[in-house]
Length: 521
Image 1 (cartoon, rainbow, N blue to C red):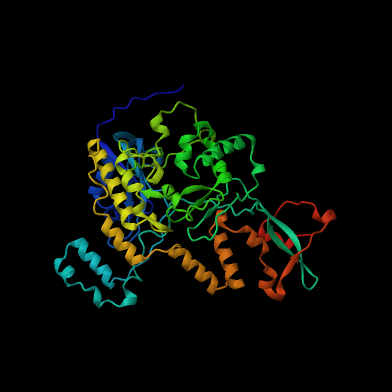
Image 2: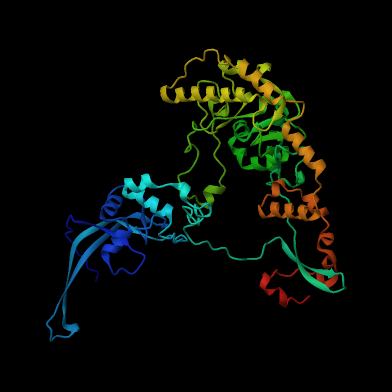
């Protein structure tokens, strides 16, 4: 028969710290946690972490983060009573609840790598003087007296490892990698690994601003798209027929919510992206080069940082969603006209989901004079400011930030008075100093580099490896990789792959790399 007990718990509260180590000196352990006051403030207030430093006197010691969580624990006082002549089995015990533990701190994170800075290091002594408030030592510090090699070489970074929890890599064989038999030049055979990686519709085609040409078609076969993906692809294609350049948010606002799950493949099938320059992060229709014609100035970007709500549309840190939530398509709902035009700036509302605006999406009437004045446009497109003169783009950013700041503080922006006033002189000065020609300086430098320097086969192979190691598949020239002459690079030790038929070509389960010596082919 189950028994129940009623305990009268006192109002006394305790704090619990699960210390990651064997405590011999309690005061020393409290000191590593920052002292009693810091522990009490952390556990009594709504603070989520508590740092532990095994070397609290060392300012360069990397702490271990502990998580403060709510608990429902009871502190029991166990009293053991027995006479000296009595055995332990005859002792009597008494349990008494003396309080509760509403919050606890426990350490589950891994310790970061540590680096011991020598005690006689001058920068360490200077930092210690700053922490202790030693005015004389601070005033007497002279950085010029330090050796050049000793200034920063012994100062560790704030963090060595970005991971606080163990990561199970698995060390499994890469799925697209197959084992093949390769015939060597001496007639023998060797086992090699071949990557049968196939392009997918999620592969982004992107280029740098300095690229000589632009892509005219996607890097994958559009026929691999599924029926629903093709339907969304056609919708996005009509948008790019209306205008050749869009931002991702602009496309999302123009497409129904139920189609958003297929936008990635639809965008890749219709457009490429710039990774740098005035069209950075824009999607451009295949075959269109906005750098070559001044009429595309209306599609270059204007960055306005600091006025976008970083929490808008973003889950809180650490929040996790189930697989069902991740795969479930968003429910379709009617969106207002204001939501559909959220990628535009009309002078009355602040864009809440983007800090990147296209010139054509800035529809504020007060800014049209500075946006579309032919006197403010250069004959060429440069990497820093596009078709606008540098001073004009700076003025445009300043005006946008001024209006957004007023709208954020007061709900309404003041009317701009003569936004183009005073621009004529800096434009004339810039035109005289830089003397823009019909070609961008970046393009001129690129052509000179291409003409005067021909990459060696080692340089080409090194560049290919850099792209592969950076997982930059979207911008990697796979055609050049396929045509690369590895035998020429390897010399006499090169090899060629032999196709073999019969039972030897039968697919077998791939084995780990460390078992390749035992293959029976």
